[in-house]
Image (cartoon, rainbow, N blue to C red):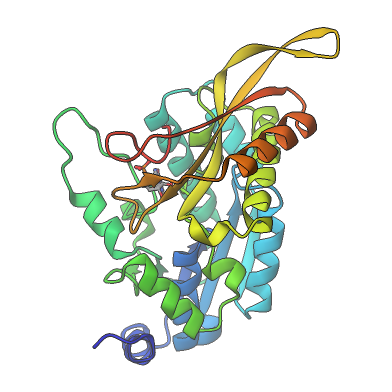
Length: 317
Ligand code: XMP
């Protein structure tokens, strides 16, 4: 029978004999998977694990600072890199979802490579790949559907010449969380909803600007905090807000407004392969709508996404 303790002991032992005295570099995303993978590798080899956490300017509000702080508290040897402008530059004028993913993937590789090259004699690349990522990246969804390029799976170029170490590639998300809790990783990280590698870029339909990111961060932060305050966060597998590329007419006082529309999305799922929209209470949705429209400049309408996967996907891009 699978238990997290047995898994941890066996994995740490295996990592130790595989890696020996070599150095490992690893990119952290703030998510559960990379955090748990890093913690396991850190248990096995300690200070020979070098972590890099990149601020791509597409994370949730305050997420970079908060998560970097948690990583340091966990004893990880982590360097935080502010690369916001580089990602915004790479994304300027890009609207196509797959081109966004490519631009972000490439920018990430450039930044990561620069940092990795500062570490002498690194031989391994640690990754937080979990079992569904492996399946997703090899599965064929039919001729009309292109598979989203998950830049965090096997996406690093040959020139890095690093061997890959992926301690979680046989686990499902709930098992990763169980391992994370057994490793005493803070609940703010272990219990965190999944968040896509390309971040808010694929939740801003159309092109990306720093101003749109800021707007969406505010909306998203109100929604996520609302879910937490109302005891709903843990009943939802993933939630977020989407900034739509349209404006709609509204009224404020005596003035006619013409401002942005945002969509809220909350789904239940096991592994993200299928998902059901969550029947959030109307009172809660009403409260969120009021709060968002009152507090976020430039937004005058909130809609709720009631589509399940399939045929919709969780993300809008
Ligand atoms: P979809 O939208 O395909 O999403 O139903 C399924 C799960 O995958 C996440 N997702 C991504 N994760 N890079 C990632 O790392 C991506 O390009 C990407 N696209 C979607 C999505 O957030 C959901 O959890």
